[in-house]
Length: 210
Image (cartoon, rainbow, N blue to C red):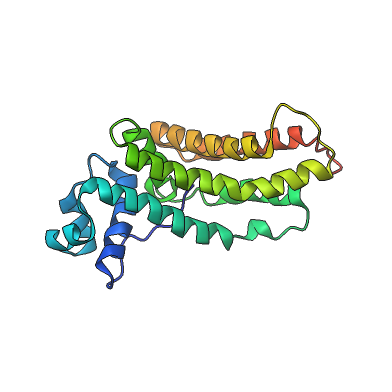
């Protein structure tokens, strides 16, 4: 998952400003390297305000993962890939949309919950689980279209399910983000999605005439 970014949180609710700051800074620096001071400075709040809303940095991490899930859910619900009438066209449009939003600086398009999950999966089970809920909540939104496409095209192969293919899209995205970071090259993430599109077309027996 990716995208919502705001470099300068709006004035208003201090808790929201802290969550927006966490969203942006953690994607740039990582969870461990992000300090409470960093967050307070970016959100323009005091440490007292931080601890009023979050009892600890770990609590902030859990809340940031939940905030990411909420905001990205709204973002993707309004995205244009839902438009096509055919379910397989919607699945392929999703992949195309994910490729299209890989733009700007690495920290602007990579995934907050993917970044945190890789870093704290052992050290902070609560953050890890919150990241997992966000990721798997998103993949679940793809399952209905995948299953409808599977039935409509008469795909009876038992080696995969709508759920497993939906999860695989997230594996490709997160892997692409890691490669893009390792090489400092967003093109590698887009390349991964090109391969995902070809794989989906193969699974659904899409021909040149389709």
